[in-house]
Amino acid sequence: MPKIRCKCGEVLRFGDIPCDIEYKFISDVEYDQYQGQIDAEELYLKMKSFLECKICGRLWFFWNGFENPPKEYELK
Ligand SMILES: [Zn+2]
Image (cartoon, rainbow, N blue to C red):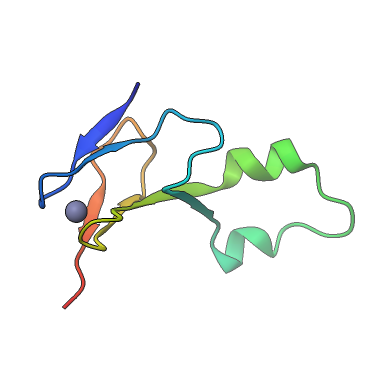
């Protein structure tokens, strides 16, 4: 199962479907290209993901797909 280790030590696993720490998002510009009925699978493939660490609250954004390292966002 794919996983990353958060800076706090928590291991974030994201192979579950559905995954309870994974959130999907799409830019407003990309979403603007859709109108009317939307194919859920097609939209799903366009969305990117971030993971939320339930321990420390860090967010790990996969801006460039799961094959590239995520970018860390830390609460201050
Ligand atoms: Zn953490």
